[in-house]
Image (tube, rainbow, N blue to C red; front, side, top):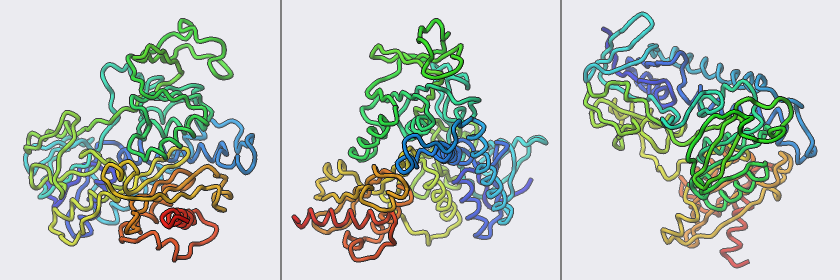
Length: 481
């Protein structure tokens, strides 16, 4: 029976970074993966595939160049599912190779198979050659989550799907219903609409992406409608079923050219409305998978969604077992998961020079069309907390680089403390928003004020010029100019 200093369960972002951190500290490390490929949801079903799909759709349709080259511009006349899959698989294969290379270079043992605890310091792995047992001083649980699949939804992985199966459709549907207006639902709704799919999005709340600044969310909903997306906000789905297309009496061409499908999806809303489409994407919540780890054997408890509770050092209720990533819940981002895994291992191995970070400065990125990103407080939060602020606005139409990129509708909003001039929040919608936000994040983390953007030179033409424009706009308001 082989013994390790550290065993990480799962090769997603938390497990990857945790394992490599332990190896860098000179410890013996193994990482266990139950799937036939490394990377977890980040590489195989979530972050990378969805972003690769987005880039493929934008590139192949030429949608980002139409403001420059005309509304009829198309980079490729007929985009097929093979085009999209081929593009995505290139990126995914690269990530597999990269992760495998990192493990090999750092002498991390990669063990394939499903793990379960059989004692406080012992696990059993169901490998292809049979069960093998290993022991370790410290464990990091980083098994992630999967899309929620409620029992009353008749998933069939073809017409009624989660985000995992959507990536494996054999054709581009003409019409789609998206249930859920969170990050995943909003991203896929925009991606599919950019392809020309007629999308209806159903969200129980009265706003998609409810955590966003309301002005940015309002602008995003406007852009969604401009893409032809029908928003059914404040609506709840009562039932979902696959039905015969003829019996549904859906009319002539079912929203497109070519053969009408034999079976369609019908979603009935509590308000009495009936929605019909070729495919329905259910994207309401995610479910943990740690129940299969036999955590009772080590004395670890989890909630009804199979998520683990941890302290600020990422320890579970058992001192030598840590957890990080989606399995511990919010914020469940690949970026935060990486850092959680690293910090968990540093604490487990007694490395105390890892400085605490400000969770209020986590950036959020939504890879919809257009991109959205934010860091810090929203206007609504500042108002509720009684913090005096002013807004500085930069519209992309004022920025030469945005014109070159073909985006004249984006905007940046900077929230500035009225008295200290510190930056309280940065909110961006438009091209490269997820890249641009980090400038504001850095200035906020270092305690900078809005004057930083006035007193420093930015390359021209760049989207970073938005910060200077927004700074002038905000200071002009504060100075009553």
